[in-house]
Image (cartoon, rainbow, N blue to C red):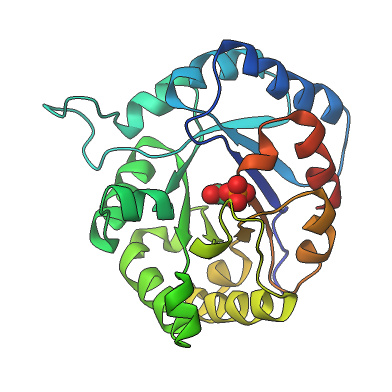
Length: 250
Ligand code: PGA
């Protein structure tokens, strides 16, 4: 069996955080200093904080990520940011296809795949998000939806590049609700099958993160589910006191 890569616990700050929030990131880095084992840890702050956070965390074990990027490297795209710019600012990962972008900005699978390509060209490691709505789950179509999102938003160029998939049921995000452990296991196994079909050994070891209302109280049991390779954490990543116990559970 191929060696499994380290788990990845990534914090998604969304549109939260101004200058003094960097203290939370510093506290996370400080607490992890010297910890030889444990998961890889990343924080994805708003773009305005990426550069300062990268400087503040330099030399620490905590990486900085972005929450989105444009599909083009540069050009007349008022308000947008290219992947190379985010890399230049200090980001090393990028969340793509988050459900909030899929719904609020109507991002479809083809656009997300193009953004993945742009991220790879710039040297950013993509975290590609997939997940069904409550209505899709209730109608029993969740696996089909997630498999379709994977087929459309994961380009073949990921075949030999590091990346992660995040399974985030839309109804679990920010709601305090989570799927049962059996439901998480079912979906992660389905995602794993798609990744192995597409990418063989590489797909067998790609981390599949769970996201949606992860907190200290449920992180341990979720991380113990087969094929859960880490977590994408929203609200509970904003304060070091909430985020650190999740990291420790991984
Ligand atoms: P949540 O968000 O942890 O606040 O539910 C997760 C996410 O949207 O990535």
